[in-house]
Each structure stands twice: as C-alpha cells, then as structure tokens.
Image (cartoon, rainbow over all chains, first blue to last red):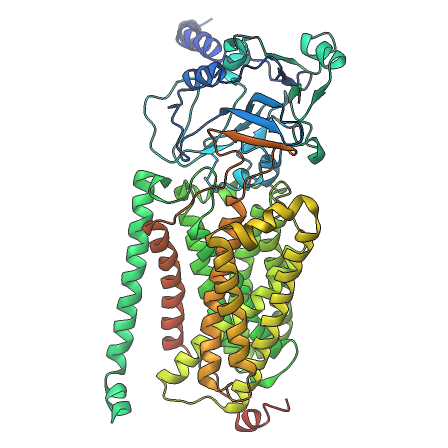
Length: 238
Length: 398
C-alpha cells in the first residue's frame, strides 16, 4: 500500500471518530429531552369519574390546583380563562342541590375539532382534546360549538407562563387533562388535589383499571348525553 | 346653477369622498392595531359572547355580497334586459362587499397574522374551512364574470359564467347559514332552516344595497330613475322582504313549538331587554313594516320612498343580525337540563355584552373598504347602468 493510501485511511478514521464524538452527546441529550419516544396510542382512553355526592359545596381545591399547575391567573371576570369551574346545581323539581367541577369533557366526537378550520383543535389517540397554539388563528368557532362552555379565549398578553403549559394571547385554550403530567405517569392536578378523592382518573379502555371497574358498578352519566359525543368525563350522582 | 357648480367641482368631490373613505379605513386599521397590541380585552367580547359587533358587520356584508348578485342573475340567467344592464354594477358591489366583510372577519381573529394558516392547514370537516374555499372562489368567479361582461369578445361566455356564479353564491350563502346551523348545542342556532333563511335574507339585503348605490350613482350623474324601472325593482324588494320575514317568523314559530326552546324564545321575543327591542322595533317595524308601506302604498312607491325603504331594510338587517348573533350567545347554554345552574363562568346567566369603540371602528373600516372599491371602480370603469330606451319603456311588461 502506498503512503498516500495509508494517510488517507488514517484521515478517514480520525474524521469518523471525531464526528462520532461530536454527535454522540447531542444524540443523548436529544433522547433525554424527548423522554419516552413511544407515541400515544388508542389503547388508552383517558377519562375521569367524578363523584358529585362527595364533592363539597364551596370547596374550590380542584380549581385552585388547576390554576397553579397551568399558570392561570385565577381571575373570575368574563374575559379570564377558567379551565375548570365549580358549578352549583339545583334540581328544578325536587330542589336537591349538587356541586360539581366542570371542564373540557374530552369527547370522543368533539364538536370543537369538527368545526376548527385549521385543525388546531385536535384529539390525541388517547382521547385528550387539545389546542395546537401554533395553528390556532383565534376565530373562536370552537367556543361557539362546545356544548359545555369549556373553552376560554386569551384576551390579554400573558406573563410568566409555565414551561410545560404553553399558552398564547389571541388563541383558544381549555383543560388539557394535565397532559404534561399524564405523559409522565402522573394524575391531573385537580384529581390529585381533591380532598374527598371525588375525581377518579384513569384509562377507560382498560377493563382492569379502577375507573373502568367503578363505571361498571355504579350509575354514571355523561353530561348532555343526548348529543352523543361520548365524553371522557363521567359524573356520578346527577 | 347648482348642477353646474357640482359639475365643475365633480372631481374635487370625488377626491373628498375618497379621502373620507380612507379616513374611516384608517380608523379601522387603528382599531386593529390596538386589538393586536392589547388583545381582545379592549373589545366588549368575552368568553360568553365570543362573536360580537365585528361579526354583525362582517356577516351583513358577506350575506349582502351574495344577494346583490341576484340582480346580475336575473339578467344573465333569466335573461331580463333591465337587470342585465345592471349586472356589472351588481358584480362590482359583490366583490366590494365581500372584500369588506372578509377583511373585518380576518382582522378580528385573535391571530390575524396567521390567516395564511387557514390556507395551509385545512380541516375538511369544518364549515369555516369550506367557507374559505367558497369565499375565495366567489372572488375569482365574480371577477371572471365581470370580465365576460365588460370585454366584448368574452360576451358569449357571460351566460354560462353567470349561471356558474348563480350556483356558487347559493352554495356560499348556504355555507354562511351552516356556520350557525351546525351549532347543535346552542338554542339559538342548530336549525336547518338557517341556510334557506340566509339565502332569502341575502336577496333582500343585496337588493337594498344595490338600490342605494344605484340611486347615489344616478344622483351623482344628474340622471333620474325611469319610473318603470323603479317600480319593478321596488316591487321585487317588497317580495324579498316578505319572503325573508316569512322565514324569520317560521324560525321563531317552530322554536316556540318545541318545549325545550320556549325559554330561549321568551328571552328573544319578550324578556331579553335590548334583543326583543331590536327585533320588534328595529327589524320588525323599521326593517319590514315601514319599508313595505313605502313600497306598496298606492300614494308612495316613487324613487325617493324606494330609497328610504332600502336604507331601512339595511338598518333592519343590522338589527336582526345583532339579535341573532349576540342575543343567540347571550342566552345561557343549557348544559344541565332540568337543573338551575350557577358558577363563576356565567353558567345559567344571561351573558353581558356592550360593544366597544374599536369594534365599531373595525366594522366601519370594513364598510369603508367596500365603499372605496365601489367608488373607485365606478369612477374608473363603466359600471353605470345603461338602459336601452325600449327596455326602459317596456320595463313594466318585461
């Protein structure tokens, strides 16, 4: 072998080695940053069963936890975002009073997704309904279409956002089912904060999950079930 | 003498009108800038009333843009010479109103700078997305239609293109009606009746706008209306007013019949404060009854009363849309049937809304766009209706 050839091979070897050394940490960091790389699948259908008989009138812990987790101001003016709210109900015939938390019902057939012109409103394979803040143009048609008034429009510039919960002025937002926590294997903030454990979170598609078992044994309802939207949030006691 | 001084200064008056239009447009743009800067907090809209005054303006203009083409369709599709002479002006007005309405709609978006996303990300299940196609297609179709009418060599094509535009605008107004008709959960909307209702309403508003603009052009050029033509057009307007009133009444009467809708109807027709007031006085009396008297009373019905009727129809149209869009949202969603609801987010309560100045400025800015396009178009090109003498004379029997 000629000298030039040896030199060339040496050069190539060194180059490949140097490239590997240069790229490897980046690849490692990339992997770390993206965490679990497996995609969400429809084997999951995240949902909640809310026991209204246990939900205390006047208790606001779920709302406070949501505001804290997602960096919402907690303001109650008509232009403030409220991802979860406590609704006080009175049966018009019997007068029975019920108190319950109301938020995005994470429908299997979400009207907001149907009407969104850009597809910014979307449903993940695991049933969580979200808004892509990069493609939302702020037309508010989804707010018109939502039967549960679950969505809020960001009316003012935002400050001090939570890194895990991106929001944007001029876009629409709603309960994300704390998707950033769920993806890490945690519970949504409201479910964790409820002092009476009235909010049971879990996988509706897994027959062995606690939520699926409970739905089989107790009477639960979907709000406005007549609309046939197959909500992920179920209520007990109304 | 007066006419002479007007003729001498005609050019100056034209530029004064352009300047006035530009000023209103600038104020509209200022409102857009302020909304961009501060967010929608400076409007009266909120999480309960999510569509407000800008949408009243925008939808009026878009619906009228479709309806004004009726004048062209009667000419091209049904071959009436009197209307054929007016088809170019009708097409110009359609483009102008569509441009004005769409500008308001786009500039009211939370993120108007992202409007291009509506073209790059397309959700086929969304009526809104269909409307993006329908509206842009309308511009193109009416543009080509104008070309076939104004370029002599293209004249043979004006009938088939006119037919296409005729079909397209039916679908377009259906699409506008469907925006609301598909909102099943809201008591005010979610009715298949809304699509035909919007179509007939569009005829009325479109013809009214056309009549106002035509009267202005005639007055500007020192021409007087041929009585026969006025008679034809005002009678047609009268028929459209009755048709629209019939569908609006049917919509409310069918709602009254459904027990679960009676609360909403009581709100809109009786207890809702500003909304019943606007509906009965604004739409009912001034938008329908008075124009019908002006049109059909044997002692009235001249050019002046036809113009007054047209202006009243336009005002009545705004009143109807205000009640329909804002009143429809103000009535609370029935999320928990059988229960009385209350919460910090307005559950079970009538939504409060008072339109703010920027909303009006934006709306008038859209009208200014339509005004400027019409003004400059009429000045630069030959849009003046030219009736052949025998057509004008035969107007009544045509």
